[in-house]
Amino acid sequence: MSTHFRPPNLALTTIGLSLATFMQVLDTTIANVSLPTIAGNLGVSNDQSTWVITSFAVSMAISLPLTGFLTRRFGEVKLFVWCTLLFSLTSFMCGVSQSMGMLLLFRALQGAVAGPMYPVTQSLLIGTYPPEKRGMALALLSMVTVVAPIAGPILGGWITDNYSWPWIFFINVPIGIFASVVVANQLRAKLEQLERPRVDYVGLITLIIGVGALQIVLDKGNDEDWFNSQFIIIASIVSAVALAVFLIWELTDKDPIVDLKLFRHRNFTTGTLAMVLGYAAFFSIALLVPLWLQQNLGYTSTWAGFATAPLGVIPVLLTFFVGKYATRMDLRLLAAASFLVMGGTCFMRADFYLQIDFYHVAMVQLWQGLGVALFFMPTLTILLSDLQTNEIASGSGLATFLRTLGGSFSASITTLMWTRRAVTHHEQLTEHITPYNPAAQHALEQLSHGNPQRGATVLNGMITQQSFQISFNEVFHVLGWIFIALIVVIFLAKPPFTPKARPVGGGH
Image 1 (cartoon, helix red, strand yellow):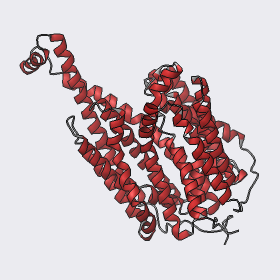
Image 2 (spheres, rainbow, N blue to C red):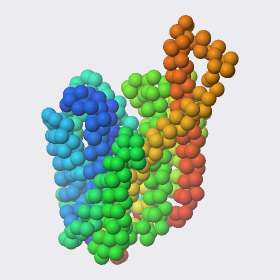
Image 3 (cartoon, rainbow, N blue to C red):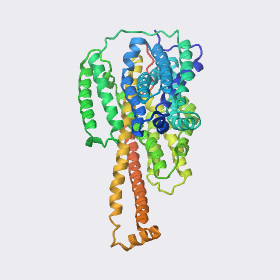
Image 4 (cartoon, rainbow, N blue to C red):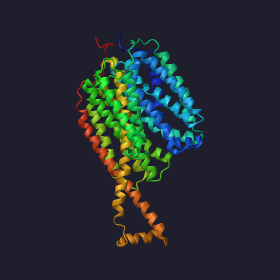
């Protein structure tokens, strides 16, 4: 059986697959801005409402590495269609939820069926495009991956302000049904070799416990003050033990539920490492810039969305060119150029200050878009390049899982570093404000207007803002150097980087 299957209408198939992925990636960020409204409507605290994000992330992180097992068992087309239909159904149930418990249950189920959608889409696109056009398919998917998270908060805010929060979930229903009907119809004749792999229960249970606990630690760590919280300590121990058992078991089991032996491929290992670290650093930027705009510069969430949105412009414009011409070049050079541009924009942000205008923030975002446009497709192509055809869904699921986990780690570490360093700088800046410092006393008098208490409050507010600004600049300095270091990592991969087009089973 040849790997290359031609659907009746390639364009329609691509639209169906891309729409489903867009919807799934959009859902990772669309609810973020609506949390206060959801909390108010369902009568819970803002802290409790963050579980709307956590429950989705935990379930998705668990189901991602199972993609390879599920495709062997059910086939890629059937898995995609069912996941997309169930995603629509769980989205509808999220929208009609009357209590927080009900919403969290359906968000968790939504995350579980969302997991395999992206890696299976990737595998189906590679399988339906001829080898010389696969770069185009991957570039298109990369664009969707970049644009959807940017569109999420803007769209979510607009829907919540103009309609009501359930609509952020209801919009998935028609999209999901359309995508699944189109793909089921177009790929109906695609032959797939199904297996009945035995279920590796030890691997499955340790994966669920280990990854579930780890994702909760990463999501809740900052709120619970990390290891000062007994809950975080217990969850960390549970996660460490379960993941240790999982790793040992999966490497020794003859039919593991997650195929860790994929790391025997040099390009898969190198590409995945570059993808995970690059995405983690990119995720830190995507998280920190809007936070800083709202907290330090007083932007509303909508304006923070507009200031960060130019990031998506260049990836959209360049998709066609990257897809068409990238494979003619050494992909390591493209990825290195991407890391250079993203590192450069981080160093630019390391010089930001409190009075910076909207234009400068937006322009740096625009330039970063060039780095993003050159990042996903070359790195993806490199990591998939030395996998057998029947390993692509597994490899894509595993790489996407590690990338998602990398994003969670970076979100926790970045917010922790930003706040901790700000506290340190606040202490250093206030050291000189004493009754014996004439300059400090003069400043207090200027600010107080006859009310010493008010003067002290205003001055403290100014120092806090400056502390967070210095800390922001430091974090971006570090991120800049991480991107520069990744240039070395990507050159550990070795050509050729064309995905292997060979029959399932590996033989010629």
